[in-house]
Length: 346
Ligand code: PBG
Image (cartoon, rainbow, N blue to C red):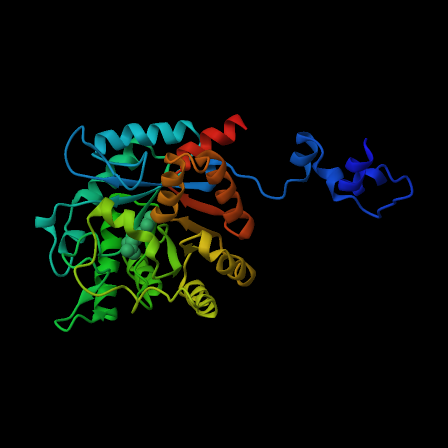
């Protein structure tokens, strides 16, 4: 080494330093893939993942959703093929959303309650073909109302809490009759878990579970989902029912209420901006905790990957692992299939 190089690189000069004794060298546990696997605190399994499905009427239909690469709306027959793929990859849970045509939408979302609507047909068919699969459905009125709100709206534009509960409970009951395993109310009305539980129980559906969207934030991250279902708002916003992103303690109140009302699972949504909420709820409940890595979060990764700026596989693995590490037992993700494949090959 020239003296000039030595001057520029003084640390190199000191290496090795035999006298340096560190009481602990954390890098020892990172030195090989085998050791890293031994000390890994959080692992992902395909059965931790819940795959959302967008269903449309018709036959042999497949409609790609531009803002959600690799995700399509599919007719029930095509959805069956998709569920078969998911099942063969070890994924054991799906959540169903239906997109209905705008002429079926009205002010009260009555199509949500119509016996044998697309939602109930989908549940019946999926349950019949894949009895081992856990089928969940979203319970909220927004894909069915012409204004895109999750609840019943009065003439002044106010979202009516208690009137909405009746509709949500009836929607849950229809899903239960069709064979649903778990209903997932995503509307954020007060008292809906207790109300739905009561209506399910008094109609003999004590085995139908409730996964409550406990801390659902009024987030800017739901845009691509609203594209997928055509459920964009015709007026206002969802801030009188979805939570303020600035609030954490309020999520703990929601979690305590949902648990007391009889929820079987709690869910935080979106996921990545709300890992602190997940971690805090984890500390106050023994219930299974879910997180929803939502459409906008997925779209951000996929858009950057399309530009070659990020590696989608790596980012999605890291993201989903981080969501579990923060406290989630299960993760709703549009990347379920991709992740399951990665889990098997990694
Ligand atoms: C319906 C519902 C929404 C999502 C799940 N259920 C949209 C909303 O509340 O506007 C969003 C999911 C996603 O963005 O992936 N209430």
